[in-house]
Amino acid sequence: MGNITVCRHALCAGLTLMIAFGPARAKRSQEEPGPEMQFETLAGPLPRIVEAAKGPYLVVADLEVPAGRMVTIEAGTVFLFKNFTGLHVQGRLVAQGTTSRPVVFTSEFDRDYNPASTMYPNPYDWNGIYIHGNAIGSTLEHCKLFFSVYGIISETKFIKIVGGVFANNGKTNLVIEGEEHLVADGPYTYELSLKDATVDGVPIKILKDPAAPKRNTFRFAGLGVLLGGAGLGVYSTLQWRDSQDRLEDLSSEDFDNLVNNTSEDWEQAQSDRNRNRILTFAGYGLGVIGAMGVGWSFTF
Image 1 (cartoon, rainbow, N blue to C red):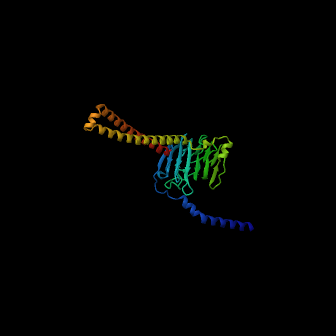
Image 2: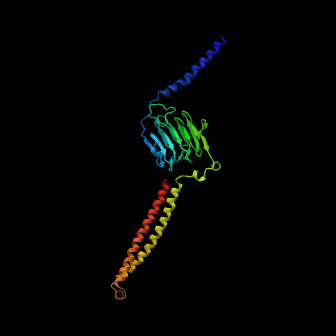
Image 3: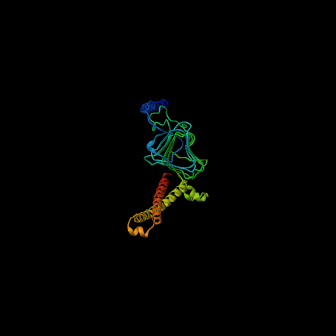
């Protein structure tokens, strides 16, 4: 009798749970897809700045951060990956998510970000993010990574992850230099200090922006050309004005002018005026080129 009583209690408890949670689960499984969404498609090398406003992005083929390039992903950007696609990082990736606007890497079937999907997301839906050994200094801040095969695999430990959230990935969530990291359920942070880099013999400069040398070259060279061109333009403008006044004086039909100056003097004054005019335009032209170089250095 005691066993029968226990079974009855267990059966009642089970029925209670089914009544409480069954309808909710059934309702979720029978949800109709939401309205169709418009996606910007992405494939191949990423632009230097991935803008959140143009997304969500539907990834139709492997994405790439090329070697020697820094790619910045704005906060709030969403990537929806098709099957067998992923992201390969060979340059430097900087994902600038925030707690309120994370950067999301997930399956195209993820209804949280693609309500129109007629299928449900599953682990192994897409490959994941592969950070190559030369992608030192890549940073992922407040990123979410769902429904991939391997999450993030990094061949280098010189990366930074702040507040990363991993869920429903097939094989692994995070592997760095062959070592799997247990990320648990909450936000996960991984970071090496510059001291760690020094101990391992990694030059500090290699952790810095790989585009910095090129950017600084254009910036300082452009600034030099800008200042030099502007200086030449101002000086030549003053000389042009003086030589123009001189030419006008020599062009006068005043008796003293005709007696004291010759046609050679007039021709020399005209030549000086023309030369100063050319130098004026050249100087200001160089200044414009320099300004363009400085401005362009802020685009990468």
